[in-house]
Structures are given as structure tokens and as C-alpha cells.
Amino acid sequence: MNNKLDPQLLIFAKSMRTNATDAETLMWQLFRAKRFMNLKFRRQHVIKPYIVDFYCHEIGLVIELDGGQHNTEDGKAYDAERTHFLEALDLKVVRYWNHDVLGQTDVVLEDLWNICSEL
Image: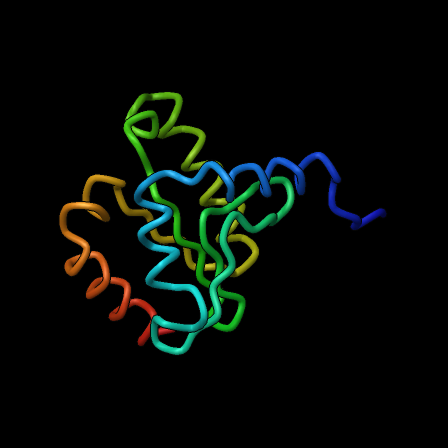
């Protein structure tokens, strides 16, 4: 079996880093350079066949920031399938709404701190 990452997936992940949402940009400013709990986070990280918003290998944590499209029936079904896949890899998946990240950053970070402390 060939475990090489699909070059198109890597190119897409790179373009997603360049075209980040406001919520992703804010979180990256808080995460980068081990600013949050001295944990190393990667953004738009490929976990084949998906690209996750943020990933911390040390504690096996995936953080997804969701916009309104995730609140549709299709969006919910896709997210459930994706979460199931990632959890099967023994990863913890947490989701936050973009508007909460932007409007209640302290609440999101406190929740995240508690989750990271338990992992």
C-alpha cells in the first residue's frame, strides 16, 4: 500500500492556509509557536483523506472550526462521518463555531484548555 500523500491534497491544504477564515486566522495567532499550553499545533494538516483545521500530534487532538455550511443536513452527515474516521485513529475531535471563536474567544480557549489538560 502506498502511504504517500496525494500531492493535490497538499496543494489544497496550502491554499487553505493562505485563504484562512477570520476564525482560523485568530486561532492560529493564539496557537502558533507553542503559545497555547506549550503545545505544537499544525494548521490545515492532512490526515488522509481529510484536511483538518488544527492538529496537535502530542496529544492526538483535532480542532475543527465550523461555519454555517456545517449546520446543513449534508454538512452534519459529512462531519459525523469525518469525526468517526478520525476517532477511529484514536484522535480526539473538537468543534467550535466560527462565530464563537470570534465572539467568545475566552470561552472557547477555556474549553480547549480543559480538554487539553485531560488528554
